[in-house]
Figure 1: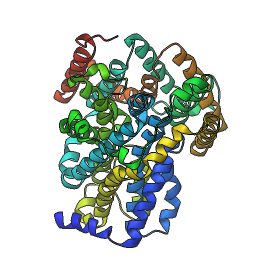
Figure 2: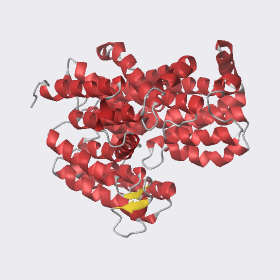
Figure 3: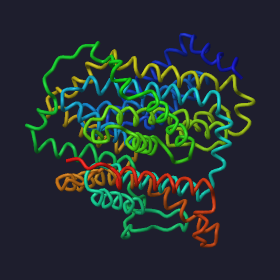
Figure 4: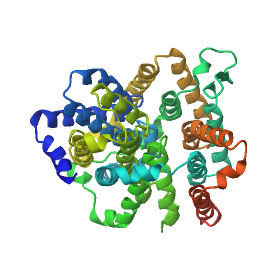
Length: 495
């Protein structure tokens, strides 16, 4: 197996394959950074072209897009407070706070380093412990999955800065929005008010665009002076994007390692995804932090924890795809299609029978993770330039791309209007100091919370004790209680 993995790295030595890797990485950076154009959309657009590609080139390119796209969502989040994807929400909160204080280069460098470390660790786990970890994931029954999602929802509420009641309100609103649309379990619409458009529900991308892009544009458009303050005039060079050893040591290797492991484990679970990984890792980092008061206002540690988990999730999400045939998130669902197009059927025998064919995927994921850090050294000054652009031009461009991206991913004019409506509603909430991240997580996690709840109750004939019958479930509930105790009950109070 080790020899086949080395052969995967050897495949990247081919000039043509390496160019596909670089091309996919750049494509992932562009699509991931621009709100509305996610890595999922980039791979979806690439899918028809993979018919004509050699298998190795196709696999290398999609894995490079995956890694770059997950990272790039944080670039516009840090610079202009508009994340390119939902997974960049935590990074946006911490990174943009640093940006406003004139530490944009530092935020981007620490962000890229954490993403790179997490991506490398995630790829290493994928290479060497894919099969044993997939067997562990099989131990999670439906009640255990409910307990995991429940822990993520609670975590979202307690880590949000400010009033816990306001966080509870917004996460509840998100959960309510997630129930709108077609109910697959009973084959009928819910809360659609007889509308053929509402039967499809509120899709994730319009929600992200509305909550972050449209809302932020409305806020910034009404406060031009504040927009100028968000982009302080200071000169940066390529050397400014090399993180200082003292800052890395302050964050601690344990934070990087633990957050990466959390990202891998959550990525392995279907429906986990980068958003849940970043929140759980962020909450754990805050729980053990010596400076919890800095979280929410520019914490280096919080930024590193969220980003390490984000990109480590990539390796974890591929584990159930290759070994069980179960995609871990929307991106791996499309990668599933790429494999099927080329006659590879994901499942228990794939790694055993086709390891030499699959190995370049592993190698591409690790090399792309290294490229993440190298990219900020090359493009960092241009990222900062985004914050210095004429705000009228920048916001008009973002608004156009956001709405076009919404339509391109949904082919629905109604969803464009939905994004606009959510943006106006989110703008009103922000004016009243309600946090928006819990609302987004409610929309993301709501379908999984409901699905696992109903399935567990159906299979147990309505016995609620099924949620406490497994050691895994009990352990997750205990961990939830620990988070509540340390992050809210015993948390020090800061002004």
